[in-house]
Structures are given as C-alpha cells and as structure tokens.
Image (tube, rainbow, N blue to C red; front, side, top):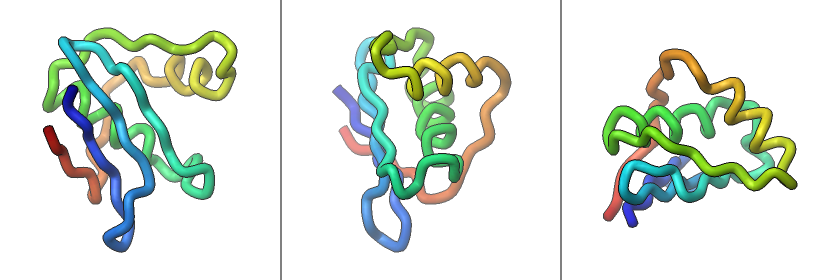
Length: 84
C-alpha cells in the first residue's frame, strides 16, 4: 500500500491509499471539503501510481458524487506528497 498525504501549513489534511492500480481509500478533513484536496489526491494517484480503478462505498453519497465528477483530466495541486 502506498499512502499519498495532502498537507496544509505542514499539517495533514487528507490522504489516499493506492494498491495494485486501485484507489483503496481517500479521506479529506471535513474542514477542507470543496477546496480541491480530494481532486489533488486523485490526480496524484492517477498520474503517479497508475490508478485505474476506484471502489466507492455505495452508502457514502458524497464519495459517490465526487467519484462521478472525476472523469476528465485532473489538475495537480500543491501540498501533496507521497509516502510508501
């Protein structure tokens, strides 16, 4: 599992976990929802880790809506680093 961490002012504000071409998890601190952090994490997962699959818990409507919107090219955002 590779973990990608989004930071603001040196503090973690979100993360994504990728494994074998799949986005296994994505979390953004609720105080940062709508600020582009989730898109930046997804961009890093797709561009840097060749993610081609995303599993979304159907009970998580916000995640399902976010996943459905992320079908086009993704913009990279500052503050995202990768750890293994």
